[in-house]
Image (cartoon, rainbow, N blue to C red; front, side, top):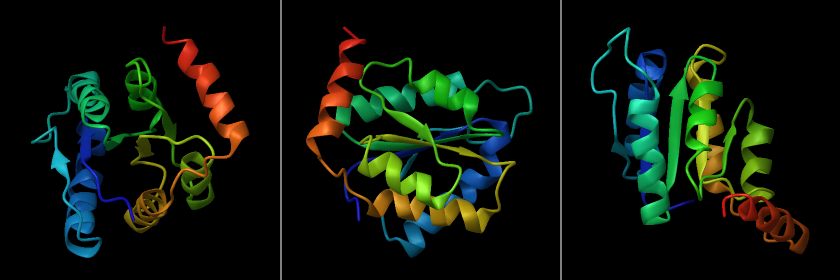
Length: 150
């Protein structure tokens, strides 16, 4: 199980799921997680205001982050603009495992309107308990992607 710095952020679309995941991560997985907002439900807020600071913290601390919006796409696009972020959308448990094992993701994007809280918790658990596989082919591919950030 991952034990490093862990952050979470969402816009209004992911606000309720974020609250549930914080309780799950802290109480059941017994991990510390820092909530970077939104801290209240404001229907007109914008996800970049919360997820970009998360992405920067993930890079600065060599941590991991979880970002949430209604479909997971917007938050994923936004954080992937920050150099050093490797974010994928965890739309099922198998993807959560492979995105960590194969792609060494440091941010997990979730879609609050496309899964139950229980399914989202299972996705988060699988992502946090999976380590990067480190195969040479995975490293080679990630190095090619990192070159694009230079």
